[in-house]
Length: 120
Image 1 (cartoon, rainbow, N blue to C red):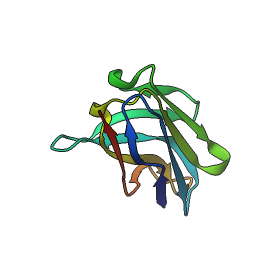
Image 2: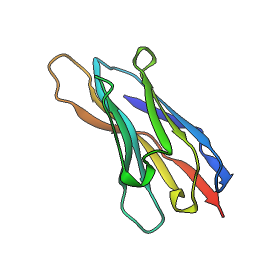
Image 3: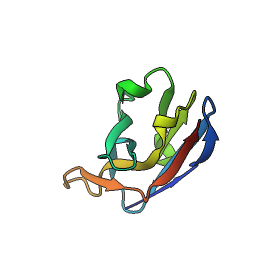
Image 4: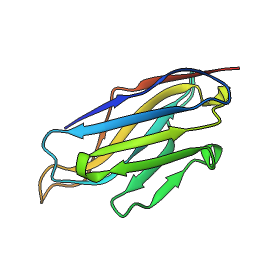
């Protein structure tokens, strides 16, 4: 299973970016997809996630500014980031909780990370 993320970049504070992540390979079912981020010198943290029932969860710091969405037919998850702040600067990682067969346990898979830099 591979997760390919795209859409990072440099933006001024108050601007917007949209991240995309597509999962491919031997996929039987996707339980959940989402985004984590790791700011410089800090631990990786959950940003937003969406499950197979389209239930979403967000970090408190991004509520009202970020929106996570998925297209299950394309095994793709998106993160629309609005009103970006310098503290949103981080490497953003796509995550998928995926079963590769009917009988396998859900397993975490990670994308390669994409840099988001917000200038003040």
